Image (cartoon, rainbow, N blue to C red):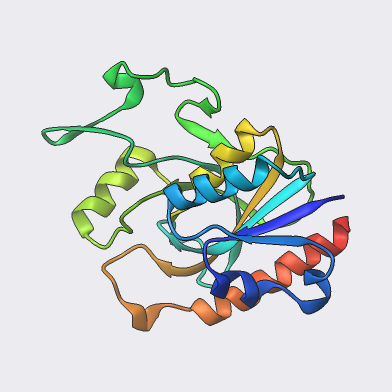
Length: 208
């Protein structure tokens, strides 16, 4: 099986990759954000084919039932800012008449991962943002509108590219912090990445 592991930053990628695994599979650093992710991954896949692509990284959690440093699989993701403001309301592309709610690769505005890998990780719904939430009003708004479990800056773009390339994919995220007013003292990045490394190793050893 030909596998590609991607991450937004070298720090995230090489924090979770064992040397033995690095010698067996290909890796790609896409850069931070959905634009860079879509461009770099899309360009790479124009000349390369994989049986499975795994995206790894950290995420913030809206869902307080998730524990800090817990590793989850983001099975579905969405672009939370893709639309327009209308006073206090938000209009998605379907409501604006620019796209249908179920236009490929979306299903009711959500893009889903395609894979058949069996594991015990909790499956969650993500939202992808350009601006990480840190304001109580905007946090409440996106929770009420989309009800996501986690947020990242790349996830939906990753799933979007893989869906369009008809390639199996997994998005693995470790919870580094809760989505709240910015408080780096409460973050658990090192432990999150350590747990992510363990879960990635289990999955790769299962399928290699």
